[in-house]
Each structure stands twice: as structure tokens, then as C-alpha cells.
Image (cartoon, rainbow, N blue to C red; front, side, top):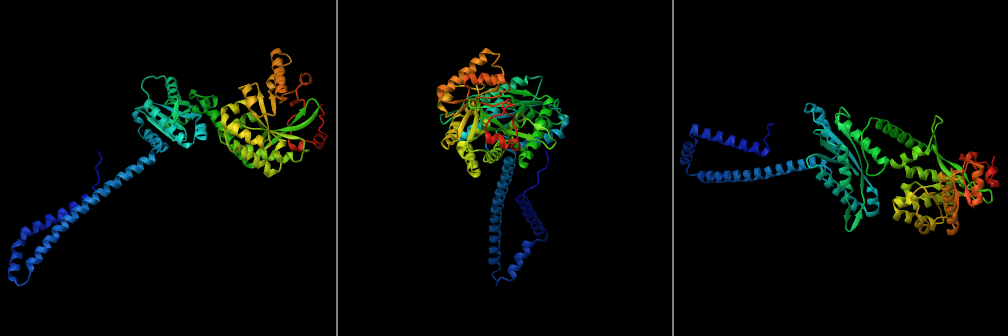
Length: 515
């Protein structure tokens, strides 16, 4: 064991004892006591004996005082050492869950690099909670903190002799030693099951899930830190593919993650530079054969002239927390462009499903409309069924705010998500959009044709207009007109184009000229 350095009180006690022993030895050797008695006897007329007594008493009291001071100093040093230990603990632990934190994990990785001779083998599980943001948004941060504490307790109970870390937010890591050939997928599923058990706080039930990725050391990396990054990569893939999934790391995941990181970096730069712009696709009244507005579609053209499809960069924007900034930027640009159109033309704009969980969405949209000066009744916002299902309470609040302000709401991709008649009856939709997947095959598929008939009839019965997407053939257009479909859009009626290519003739005449 390493030798411990003596404390200051201990050094002072040793010093005092050393001086005492030195004086004692000198007094004994030179017979100071007898000489002092003789000196006092010779000068007995002076009160030297009383002075000497007072001096002895003062010295004794000084010894007592010194002992008390040394005791107090010893206690103070002990408290300071305890405080330093507490500071070290805080620096290496999460104060909410009391689990080791990222700094502690880094020290474990550093120690593993130093002590490679131990030949320890580990399984690293990276865990991200599914649905935690909704808990914070709907129930408040107090409930969110309670959920994190409970998750920490469940993981610690599942791994009582292993390291469980909280890295921040709703991210956890388990560093488990391996012996033999354990079934790591089954262990990952046990993590999902443990976290997925019902939570109840103050009578409120909380539904939570987990995405788990794992990697093994040293098979998946020469360094423990690298293996942890690989497990995090596997967790990202699991989260992207769904809820409550467990994924082992495979090398190809690195390429996907590297691509995502690259796209995210390029996306941040593109948003900052305003390179992602709205293109406009005509919305056509199929009965009057005229343009009634345009749908704004996000388009990203890189400096090299390459178009990045929205199916690639929109999910990245959602996951990286960039969707709010991107949406606000595109909506402001689209509203500014719409001011140059005739006043009866509407602007249709898509909202990301994630945004309907944001209670401030309606206020931000109305602020943009107010700043630009575009009347609310000229804006039509498209939302999907899945977006409404994800957070029905917040979605209803947001939609009600927008409808009360005069904004129109269209239900996009009808029939492809969680179709429910209760949604149509309880939400104030102005329009239903038939997904292009039905339009593409309804001429040759009798069931698809009947579905479109039913949707058109449903819209007529509810007093809701119907729009068909993806019209690319004359025969499709004719059939939809025969069925009584109100509006249409697709390549046949007009491809998405930048504002510069929306000609004055096309907008001013508002008459569809198909070629």
C-alpha cells in the first residue's frame, strides 16, 4: 500500500514532543532544577517563585490550548478531505441518478488501455429511451427526473455487479464483463423489458421504451473507447428502425453513421447559408381545370449541382434537432414568395410529424405569417395521420390554435397510416389528400379503385374536399374527374419548380395548360 503523508496536526504534535524531550534532556543533564532553586534562594527578596509558578501554569494552559487547537485543526482537515472526496464523487457521478457519468467512463477506458494485460472481455450496451421527450413535454421535468431515477434503479438491479453509466439526457451505458459465451441479444431484450415495465407517478401512467445497441471488447475494437462508440452506432441504427429494438454492431453500420454525420454537417451548413429552398408544385381544381395554389416542397441543391432528396435530409434534420430551424426558414421564404401571387391562390406547406409535439409551433407559424404579411386564410398546412397519433393532446392544441387563426388544415397521405374516422370527425380538416400509392395502381386494381371511391364519398358526406396526389397519366386524371375528386397534383399537372420558373402567365391566368 502507498505510504500516507502525515497531516499538519500530526506534524505539529511531533514537533511539540520533540522540543519537550529536548528541553527535558537538557534540564536533566545540566541539572537546571537545582540551579534554578539556588537562584531563587539567593534572590528570595524578589517574587521569582510566584513568577515561576505563574509561568508554569501559563505553560500548562498553553499546552491545553494547543491540544484543543490541534484537535480542531485535525477535524477541519478531516472535513476538508471529506469535501474533496465529495467533489471528486460529484465530478465522476450523475447527481440525479447517482450513477457514474461520462468522465468516470473515460477514466475506465483510460485504465483499460494502461492495464491491457488483464485481458478482460466486455459487452458494452448503449441504451437510449424511447418516448422520454414526451414525458418531459406533457408531464414536466419533475416526472422526467423521476423516470430517469427509476430507469437507473432498474438497470442497476439488472446489473448489480457491473458498471452502469448515465452519459446525459436519456442515454445510458452498461459495461458488463463477459464469461463464456452469453446470449447478448437476449440480455439486450431483458434491458428493453426492464425499462418497458409500466411507470406510474402520482397516478399518471408513463409508457416508455428503449433502443439498445451492443458491441463486444476486444472483438469489435482494439480500445474500449472505440467499442463504446461502436455500441452507440448500433443503438442509433436500432432507434432509427423502430422502438424497443436490440441491434449488435456490424462494421457496415460505421459507413451509415459516417454518412449521417457527413449529411448532418452539410445540412447545418446548408441551413446556415440558406441553400435549402422551396420548390412549388401546382394544386389544380379538377372540375374548373385551373390552378388554385401551390404546394411548397423542400429542395436541396449542393454546390456541385447534386440534389439531395428530402427522404434523406428531412429525417436527419428531425433527429439532429434542425427541423424547427429548417421549417421556419422554408415557411418564411414560401410565404414571402406567395405574396407575389394573386390573392386567391393558397400556399400549401408540410409539417414534420415531430413538430406537432411542440406546443409553440402554432405561435411560431402565426408570427412568421404576421412578419411577412401573408393572410392566414391563404395558408394550408398538411399533417399526417401518424403525426396526430404520436401526441394527440399536443397536436389538438396546436391545430386548434391554427384553425382559430384562419389557417386551413389538410390531412396528408390518408389511408397509409393510422386511418380513423374519429380523426376526421374530431379534427377540423379542410381537405383530405389521397396518397399517391393508391393513385398509381387504382386503374388496374379494383380494390384500390373502390378505396378511392369510398374516400371521395366520405369527403362529400363530411363536407371535406379531396385531393389526389401523384397524377401522372391522362387516364388517371380522367378517372378521378369522373369519380368527382375535387383537386389533384402530380407530374402530369405540373412538376415542382423554383419560384423563378413559376411564370407570370401561369399564375396570372390560373388556367392549367398541360402539354
